[in-house]
Image (cartoon, rainbow, N blue to C red; front, side):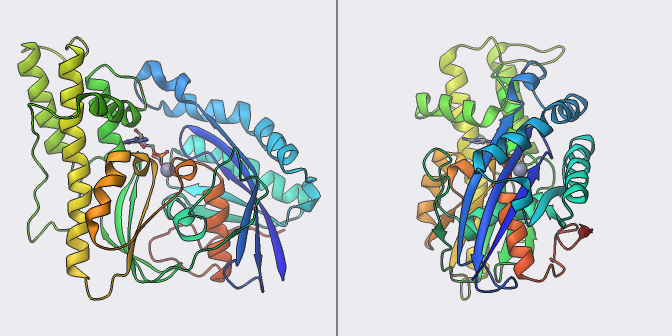
Length: 370
Ligand code: KG4
Ligand code: ZN
């Protein structure tokens, strides 16, 4: 049995996160039999970006720079381990905001050089799926230090990664072989939630706010169109149509004809009903595309894996119960950006000998081996 201890660093957007995670496996080139999180530090910049209604890249990078050192120290303290106990480092190499990424990558490079340990580059979108593959349940409050057996999953699986930056449907043939079936033509699903929230005068991030208002409404006099779902677009996503429909609805309800349209002054009831109808259309599209992919690969697909910030949406989770195959979610605490998922993805890549991943431009790179 060998135990590998990794410190992982995530700074691709507006969370500064550092985790320390261990894997236990019979050999370094095998998938982990068990994993455990010794430290899980996530510091969100939500409040800093809230006045702007979205993430401001320059502000994000500067805040990562101010905090990364302290958060890494806190993670070591939380784990109870000295830095010399680390076997390696993993860092998000992309995709993400370039200034924000550079802070994490340069910090990780410096630390790897100082400690004389390898640094593994991880693709952020790949990493979102790793908790669904390796650690389907985890709560930072109660599970730090607890070993989790990695689940036995039946492949091939369909995977849907839906976050603020990505909306990607894939066919997952094994823990590390993934084939992209569809992406978004315009906005990511979470981005559409954020933009509609901004239109309605709700705070950033918009996903949880839209979900909260939709739950209050429980129904709506409005209905917004689903994206085109035809032979040529069975696996792709688009949220521009539904966004325009919501904008037109707000224009009608407020009587605004000139200038920038805002729904901030709408009555609470109207806002809730618009939020409900938007959520139905957005979630409906995600479920439709998964259903299409399931129909197109029905002879082989054994289960579905769902991850990313939008996977925290309860309505989405409920809607997926009608899919007809078992659905495995990333645990809620690992849906939005965190560094534990970066460590888990590094374990998967290590077990695969850091082989070329089909859609990861960065996962195969050992960016520094002192
Ligand atoms: O994965 P994530 O933390 O960051 C990215 O990699 O983008 O996802 C953040 C996104 C935001 O757009 C946020 O509005 C959305 O996930 N989100 C939700 C919910 N919670 C977060 N969208 C819908 N419903 C939610 N409950
Ligand atoms: Zn993310």
